[in-house]
Length: 352
Ligand SMILES: C[S@@+](CC[C@H](N)C(=O)[O-])C[C@H]1O[C@@H](n2cnc3c(N)ncnc32)[C@H](O)[C@@H]1O
Image 1 (cartoon, helix red, strand yellow):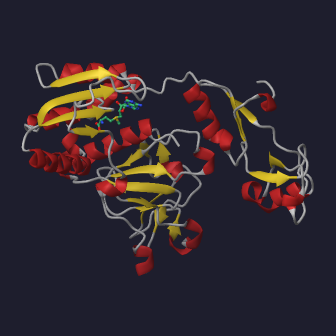
Image 2 (cartoon, rainbow, N blue to C red; image 1 turned 30 degrees about the horizontal axis):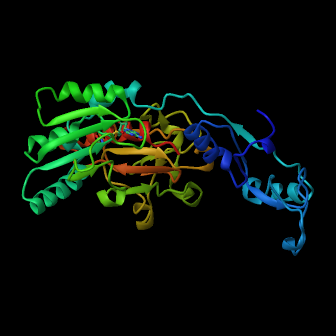
Image 3 (cartoon, helix red, strand yellow; image 1 turned 90 degrees about the vertical axis):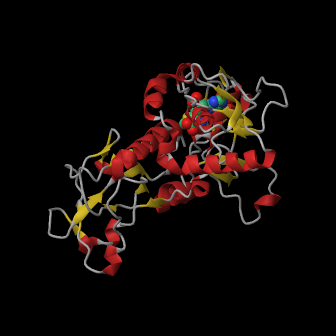
């Protein structure tokens, strides 16, 4: 990498090297620079130098990254004011990573044959499609961007809601699955798109769908594990006890499953002793569990794991570094399928 000062694309702000600079580099095919840590104003460019009580009066201030209280606690603060060296900006080039769905197209297709198992999403879309159809008094022309294997368009077609359905997707593998599964459906066409331009005439759609809703729209509740272990020491146990329920930690998540109990140095049973403790338990059910997002994980994929009541019937408690989403309807395997679908989606999609 050449000197940061030579680059037009230096982003001097807190933690830009962790997400914005790489994103910008990949999106625009350029080299960028960002700061890995927190930034601060300094009187010197090479080491932290306090800018005094009236920094605005100084002609030559520098925005630099150094250890500090926010990043390294009190020890960082001491190092900073002792004149810590400025951290080099980190260079980022465009990545060639294949981030498309191509390599998971088969797996995705197998999990998403029937879109109606994602009950809330399906209800959300269907409600809006039906309302629009009533408004126009005829079947709709729908364009779906990011159509995957076309499950949604087929489900709408099956119910007679479509005059035409155009499914567009960035992944050639997904488009191939969509075409295969939709053979013989004259109202549906699928194509690849690359970039923001949609190669369709202006007046082609009554409705455009594209991963349209937030978790709140869907009525999906995601809750952080309620057990903060150092506040609940009285209820923790390293061995099984009467009335104790599983307590799941991040260390229990492995390759998409929850391995409980497992050889980790944590007390993996929670034995409630009063109503406050009992309020930390969650009912028996299927859960998609992910580690709570933290600064350290910002550049990694978030992988979700399945907690199964088939393996561990009864209530369960999740430690506070986990986020759990309860599956819907656990009779006839629906809960399992919905949760697996959510896990797959989370694993492939959430890159923070
Ligand atoms: C999680 S799947 C959703 C498929 C479908 N909408 C559904 O709900 O079942 C996301 C799809 O969006 C596609 N996708 C992601 N980014 C895209 C982009 N920028 N343009 C078009 N498609 C994109 C992926 O290839 C993938 O097939």
